[in-house]
Length: 143
Image (cartoon, rainbow, N blue to C red; front, side, top):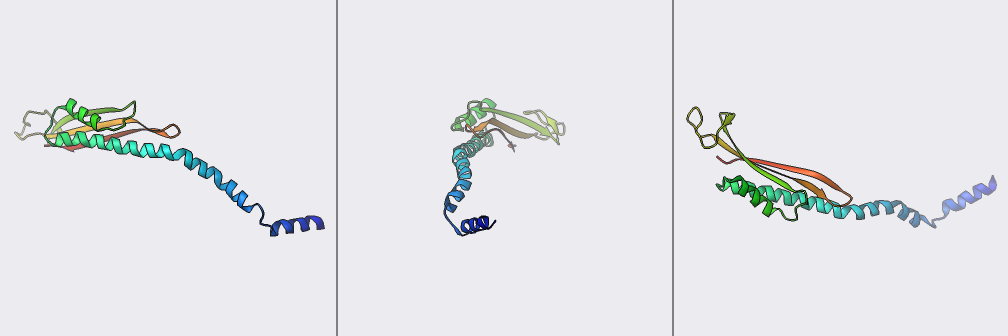
């Protein structure tokens, strides 16, 4: 029993190997950061680029454009480094007094319908270890 106490007191007062133990504890955290950082960076960049693409389509519509295929093309061209499964749709709808209306025709009460433009972009973002599906929808009233 006395020998165990002596051995424990020596180990308690010794600092040898403390740095190695601390490094061994932090090493897995550092490894995870190093492995995941590029994928997180790609995902964040992908979201920003998808936002830019939807913004380009919306700006086309706000500038008076009303051809939905052109709006989609403008958005896809503005989408840098788009993922392989990138998709974008552009649509236009009209409302009369809160209800559905017909674009290009006056409402029943003789007013011009409110025109809305919607862009939906989707794709898988990220890298090899972290990836996720993202969909961004932007709707603006253009008239």
